[in-house]
Amino acid sequence: MRLLIDDTFVTGTYTTPVVSGWVTPPAALTVERVAGLTASAIGAEDAALAPSAALLLLQQSHTVVPSIAVVSDDTGAVAMRTPVRPDEIDATPVRLLDAGETAEFLARATLQPFYGITPTGWIRDDDALEAAWAEVVIVEGAEALREPEGGFSEDLVRAWFILTSGPFVNHLLLAPRDMPPDELQMLLGFLDAVKAEGLARRREWRPELAEREGISRERSNAFWARQRLALEAADRPALLDLLRQGSRGTSNPPPSDVSFVNGQ
Image (cartoon, rainbow, N blue to C red):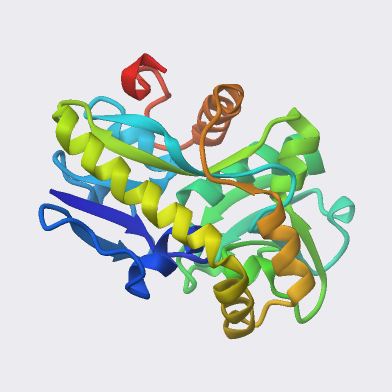
């Protein structure tokens, strides 16, 4: 059995114990850390701690396991960078600078409703002509928590919270719908141990990670303080709302067949 974990600053509580060897997976479980994990890399028999946008393409083959997740309340690691104040921008191409699909969904759900900015295009190719015109750049992860060299930086997780009163569901544990109960129990036993170890030793690895990534201690502490590691029942409407609003205008299907393990 294979478990894929999106390897990013945001999932540090899960990845650090694995890479540090603090928790050893059972012999029947192969754990792989994948930077920039997408739905296309997740096989039908794989479990994955994946960015929440991946759920849309996997909703028929996978189910959400609520006890393992990454949820940010009102402070997060998705930022909008602009050269001028956001209220001075009417319409612009939006450059997605190493920003994944979930960050794009969040930007799509907040730029016009919250900031009044009309995106005229979503640009991933740095060589595209529109990239040079973009007055909005979306970044995520460690880059979103670093101080910008110039201009303005807006926390889109905070914007989403103010706009909807809901949290931002960054990552979900997705398991195959037909996974045998004993395999699911093994998977959760491992991830629960990883999460517990990551939290128990957080004062050891979080400052080191922040220093390595060039993030101030204050910004790092504020980010981790507002992160939760399970998907509560009250978080699910916010998840579905983000997937609906953020996927509009994309090729993704709407969230129509989302299930939670054990019917939770």
